[in-house]
Length: 114
Length: 115
Image (cartoon, rainbow over all chains, first blue to last red; front, side):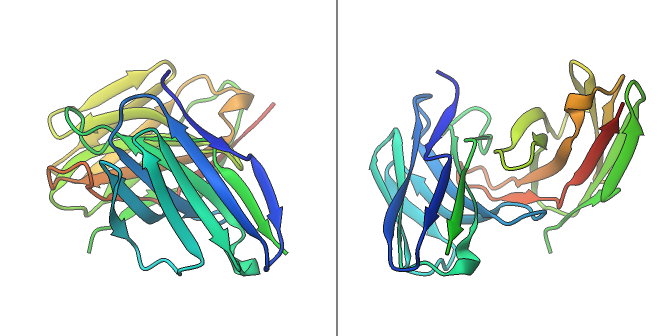
C-alpha cells in the first residue's frame, strides 16, 4: 500500500459542531503532517507528528486538535470552527531515513464551515 | 528568507504542444526539490524529486532540471494532454537532515491545456 487515505472527502459543518478528519497510511512512515490549503494558495503547515508525538504546532488555534493514536493514523478534531476555516485539509506522511523529508500527500478533505 | 518563486503564474497551451515552467528558490541549506501536480480540490502528487547532485530527472512526459548553483529549476512537459491541466507546484526542502525538515512551497503555475 503506497498511498495516504483521508476521510471524509467532503465535510460541511456548522460553527457549533464537533467533527473529526481522519488520515491513514500503511507505508511505515513515522512522520505525519496536517496542512491547510486555501484556494489558489500553497499548502500551509499546521502540525507535525514524529513517532506519534506532536513535534510542531504552527501556532494553530485550539479549535483544531490533532491526535495520533498510532503510527498509521492521524486525526484532526474540529470544534467551534469559523467560516474562514473553510479550506482543503491535506494529510501527508514521510519516512525517517533515506530520502528524508519526502512527503506523500493524501487526496484531502474539503471542509466547508457554515 | 527562504522563498520559492514560480513563473509564469498561469499558462494556456494547445494540446500536443510543449511547455516549460520555472522555479527559483532561496532556501538554504538545500536538501531536495520536487515538482508536484495538483488537480483542483485534490492533494498534490509527486512528479519528480531531485537532490543537490542531480541535474535532470524524467518521469514520462515530464522532465525536471536543477541548477543548484543558480538555484533554479524547470519542469518541461512534452506533447501536452488535456489531463495535464492542473497546478504545478515547486517545493524545496531545507537540508536540516531531519525528517521534520520544512517544505517551502511555491504558489504554483496553473496550466490549462486546450483541445
